[in-house]
Image (cartoon, rainbow, N blue to C red; front, side, top):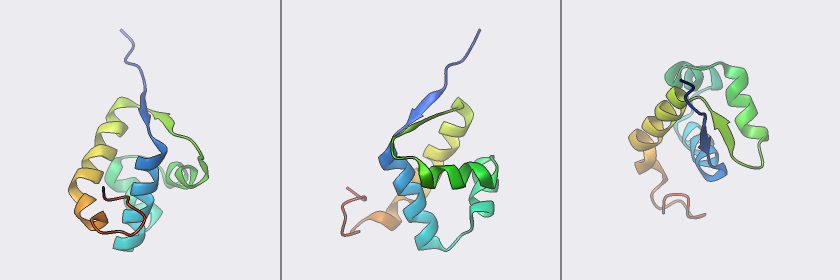
Length: 81
């Protein structure tokens, strides 16, 4: 049984990048936290659309966003809304 990849929206990719900027963590540290490679995080920066990721990575990205979304509340571009 194949488990399909999960779509991660462009907005969520931007949220991830905003959070790592606010927290001052490196691509390597984020990659370690969500269980991927630093090159994958660098790819996040180049996507202009959303992307398909493995289901387990989608879960870890969403957990990262849930854990850190409080950092985006009140950001002037509306990412926290």
